[in-house]
Length: 432
Image (cartoon, rainbow, N blue to C red; front, side, top):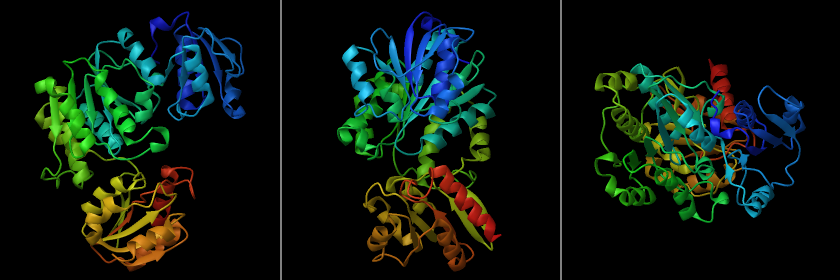
């Protein structure tokens, strides 16, 4: 568990007792803090129905009055723009932070280490996992945290020389004030999560804060394929050799990297390579790591090849910008798309419509997506993912790909994108 000596004797309010909230409470108490915590879900409160623990004191109570607290710790899912407790905290002059800020505060008490922070609208998880894998390949102690894997405070501290690789959403950056990353990475910025921000510029500004928290001599790696990211890179020109810009459309031989196919993964790989070089990883280890990287579930995951047809689970692609690279990666695609729509603009995918042989639309977005896509390709509108997999499998020929890349959230039919991806895997397994 990661703890900070400076928490001792301080008072913290913690809102939310899911996994990251529970880890936060445990770490704060272990650090000698006084904690008042609450979750509206009674089942999540149940494990905390106790009066004291070995270090610190826990009070389980609604957070009605924040007077006297040193900070309010919330999960990234709490909408700071609308939640009433956020207004109460601001009125009381209480900082609103998250577990990443607590990790930043604990760094002084950890063995010497480095931190890599990775953000962007798309590609964060793959790049984070790839950087961690390159460290593993080189024999460097490393762990992943933030928006991926286990809560960062729950994990055991690394030995001296270790690398913490953090996937950071804009929400997590919003809750962080002092995280000075040794290497900060921005992959891209495209419209997403705009219900939480006062327009797209505010969302882009949230991403840019990752660099404003850095010391000037620390390294920045930025993809410049979109205007906001390019503008952020220009603002950091004074970094000189500590600024690496990744241009779009770089031609790379990815044939030896089975889990890093497509132009989006070329960018992810270039970012990870740049980070690895800053960390001092040898080129031979980088090459071995790129070749042996197994990828992540639900992100261009090759599930099976049946009768010469490849089935690819890209359920994590929940917006059109993240679907476009998947469509670019394969020449002949049976595309399963739809779910709970975030909008009906599929223009980001249009440059690759010629790769699509047939489309199968599903979920709430199905009828509208079918209208948009019908002038460009054959379309079937189906109710369920199972029906779409069956129809696509029946039509696909050897050498073609059945691709689930939904361009939508999953909440119309599934708990989350992971459950949707697991349903796709089961449907494919049933074919075999």
